[in-house]
Amino acid sequence: MRYLFGCLTMAVATSLLARPAAPALDKAAQRWVESTLGRMTLDEKIGQLIVPAFSSTYLSTDSDEFDRLAKLAREVQVGGFIMFGGTEPAPNVVLNPTYGTVILGQPLAAASILNRLQDLAKLPLLNAADFESGAGFRLAGATAFPREMAFGAANDERLTFEAGRIAAQESRTLGIHVDFAPVVDVNNNPRNPVINTRSFGEDPTRVGALAAAYVRGLVSGGAIATLKHFPGHGDTAVDTHLGLATIPYAKERLAQIELPPFKAAIAAGAEAVMVAHIALPEIDPAPGTPATLSQPIVSGLLRHDLAFNGLVYTDSMEMQGVAKQFSPGEAAVRAVQAGNDFVLHSPDERAAVEGLRKAVNSGAISRARLDESVTRILQTKARLNLYRSRRVDVEAVPTVVGTRAHAAVADEISRKSMTLIKDDRHEVPLTLPKESHVLYLSVLDYPGGWRIAAPSRTFLPELRKRWPSVTAVELSDHSTPNELDLLRATTARYDAIVASVFVRAASGSGRMDLPPALVQLLRDVATSTASRKQPFVTVLFGNPYTAMTLSDLPALLLTYDFYDRAESSAVHALTGETPITGHLPIALPGLYPLGHGLDRPTKPVL
Image (cartoon, rainbow, N blue to C red; front, side):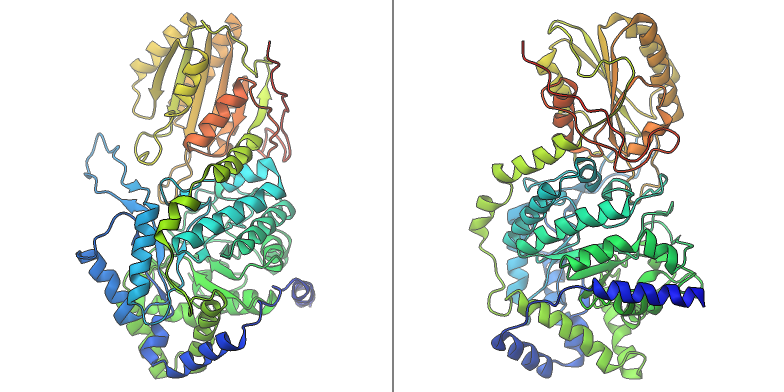
């Protein structure tokens, strides 16, 4: 009885926060939706539920890959595409497996490919991209904002709104209509290997407020915001790219932690939700059933309890949380039966279509259920005016994407996110004569996979602008004991030591820690520099929970990010050229509480 009362209370409360009604279609748009739906064949309707992927590197129209995409647009009549960056082949070798395969795409190539696919499609395509930190997340030269946890540390709703608006503006200029952002997961598990810095933080109220601000920005820029990963992927220690994670909580707990950010962002105008490949046995006891394929979760918790009437996407169906258990056809059928509108990134689109066709013909999926999703998809396309104009102006891309004004907003967020959690020797900001000899340690979790942004490529030259005499050493899990001992023996030669620690919580890697030998090295350096009164400061890039294993170090600055912007901001913060004002959006258990941070003003110019 108590459980029932809790569910009813949540249903009543969330109904008050239901997504505001989408703008009504004008008469012409409504006529287009109705007439289009009335003319569509079964196969055309099924095609609208399929969202394949493509890479945004240069692609000739006269190529096998474009032929594949063209057939999906023209023959399968898919509802849209998801755009990724690109990949390069790498040798699968032992001993030195350091080659990266992931690369960024190109804005002009992306817009060109999307225009060509729009020309081939009978109905306008509704295209999406994982622009979690802006278009620069996938495209070189586009604006790349810091990771969401940096937004949490900066805690500025105005800047968060601006970031959403800019992301939307660049998206629409490229031909992307749906941003798979923001991530509204509450990251309250320090061992989360897949969300981590992708989350605004661990406080549900602040996550909801920042997510709502970002959604309002996306909406103002004309893009569709997609909340992910429903019903909350923050409290798991399993990467769903590799396996099925389990959230062992009932609705009462979800109502306190996981769902408030979804409710706040839906109320702010989010028109889409992405469902996660996580099992919630307290809500759907069917063994091994991910939320993506669960009717009690998608149709029950999301559609009914949260009164969400917008688009629902599955997470990528290529992820092992689903692909290990279900064939592409079965997975697609179960996804639609659960209440999803789109089957995203199936490992076999034609098998997914065939599975759906058989399900509709057999009655396993009713035609009314199919029409429900197709109508919602067509209405969204009409609301975006795609039935009148579906192409973009490629010539406009360089005037909108990656401008200095957009970069200035990203810079401000990055600067405000820098968080000094420890400064026992009062050495931040660093005050060293220009002629000082500085030892710089670039400390990596492992050397492979850094194809997009080589660690320290900005930090090191920025450091040398201030102190020309810098000796730089890169360390990783490949560093030998002899190399580490040699380094220990040479540290006394320098006037100061600066270490940058790069630890990823990268999807699909299965890793998120600094190797023990490197942790011990940094601890030894801390001990030896203390006896010599030698300045020693450490900057953490990526996984902020790494600080929990480095608590013996005298000074720790968190950035929550990688890439050039974070490295530049960190140098400016360490040298006192910009103030340090960030505060922890997460707790570091056993070390510092949520909200902790040491403020530092700008160093006076003498």
